[in-house]
Image (cartoon, rainbow, N blue to C red; front, side, top):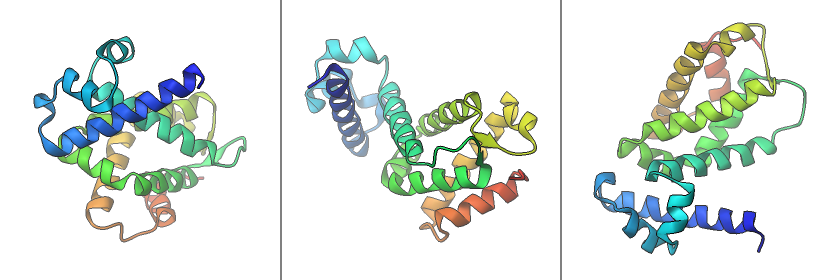
Length: 179
């Protein structure tokens, strides 16, 4: 196994162990030693790559988002509604994890992964819209991340009554971003 594959396997092990432990007890009662035992990863390995449990969750979520984005057509620029449809598709596949993170007060992890991917899309000029200056504004990005994540959690908690495509259109309308 290559070093990159080992790193991925260990991240998945840590991620799974973290979710299992969070389902059982509060985050503040989880020790790094306990997490590493559960994940079958050494503490040395953990501390070389992460500082906190949130770092594990954030890196895993960012990885999942990037994998999901690679499935999106490789065109120059993508519409906001299309990107939101893709985001809600990913949220749908990660529903139980997202709801668990929300329930235990780790919304910052969800927001952080959204912001990282949004910054990546902006840096690579993948977002197509007529109001690009607004989308590039860091305060608007923070506002948007909070809004999108809050709506996604509400959507999950209400049983996902709309399809990801419908949610993509809803988000484009709410943010008044023209594609």
